[in-house]
Length: 294
Image (cartoon, rainbow, N blue to C red):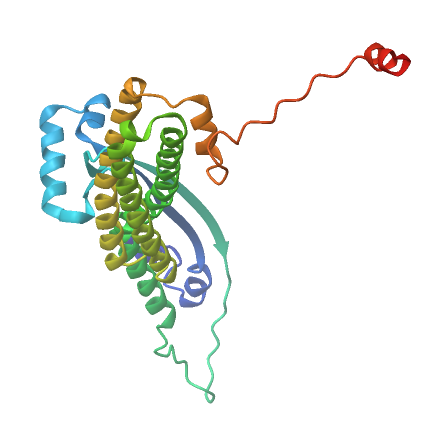
């Protein structure tokens, strides 16, 4: 306002010159970019990052108060994790532009009156965009946790497939190489664990299909997927513990005879019939000639 008054005074209150010169505009624009480094970390990981005990306790208290959006259990080891902000960095940029526009006012006796109108659509659109951007900033932790759960579920399904395959391979090895009396109990338990792993794999796979329908973006899907992975983690942990136990103990089991092992490979044939028939020794040509001469 003071600059405009000074300009009008300098032009000796000449309105014509004033309206011509007032449209020399210098625009300055400042923008700020905020880069936020955030993610899921356990208490031990925060200690490794150099956080103090007081800072860790403060982060834990805040995340626990915010609930499921900022706390979760790791899908692999079950350790409690918190969604924390590690750092915030701002980048400022400034832009300047110079525009010059000359207009000349003309008095008219007749003609359409000057009307600025009441079209504020541009301002309304800008306000809407700013509101949407603020909403996205608020929802960022939610969107991030949905994406992380999606990736975790995908890896978890692969790990469950691998776990079931290892258990089935162990069952085949026990049936082939060890006596039935030594492995009867453990085979029954292994089959039970395989059935549980398969059951929870189907449940987690069902959650994946549900996520594809809902584009992995609803709180109901997130809650269901986390619950099913938590249950499946417990089942897989039990199966892994029992698998390790049997692998360590099988060296003390009674092994089958080679013939019985062959029968275990192809049980359709009678016992002892899986071996290749012994070949008759080749007769010597000289023996054949001597017989003819006789």
